[in-house]
Image (cartoon, one colour):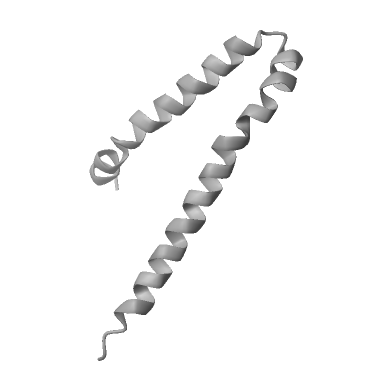
Length: 74
């Protein structure tokens, strides 16, 4: 069987690009919604921004442990 390595690398790079762009769009546009959401909830914009920051940081830390958890619990 012949190795078609370049094709697999292009698919991998394309998938990484799609994932990175979708996550990037979500995280870069969240600032547009700070004011309307904080006004709707009746909290200050700083409080809501701090909450969003903590959520993103918690997600980033949690992602480090997910592979171990997935290995333990199939």
